[in-house]
Image 1 (spheres, rainbow, N blue to C red):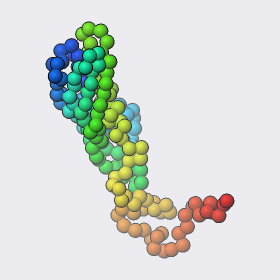
Image 2 (image 1 turned 90 degrees about the horizontal axis):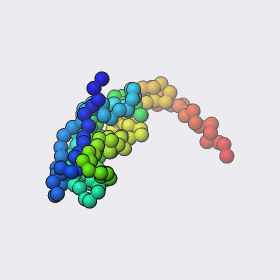
Image 3 (image 1 turned 90 degrees about the vertical axis):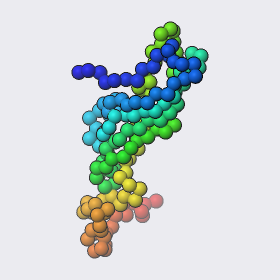
Image 4 (image 1 turned 120 degrees about the vertical axis):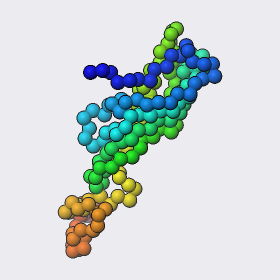
Length: 159
């Protein structure tokens, strides 16, 4: 299998005033393993300014990628755009002919933008704790019948 493309900058060939780089990396770069709950739906796009400052390569810009996930409240699938609009990287330049791979830094920016508990929308009502109905599509008979007691109610009396 061929290795996915990477963003590699030749620090020795950069213009003194820096350079603006835009492009994309393949979706596989995100490499979340075999996660069925969250996965990339597009390539990872970047728009960065790269500048050499002595023996350091400074990168500033943004990165984004379309993501599919399961909502942690209702279990429905949804898509959104994970963004790192304040991408900042600093890489040490060692030796001559220094090729600097920025791929991992950009990838990490997107991973940090992923929520721990994805939610399809802010006001997602989730599922009924008793019957499992998706409350985003309407109320269930459990709530209108009354007498619904949370399984955690017994803990309220403990001190």
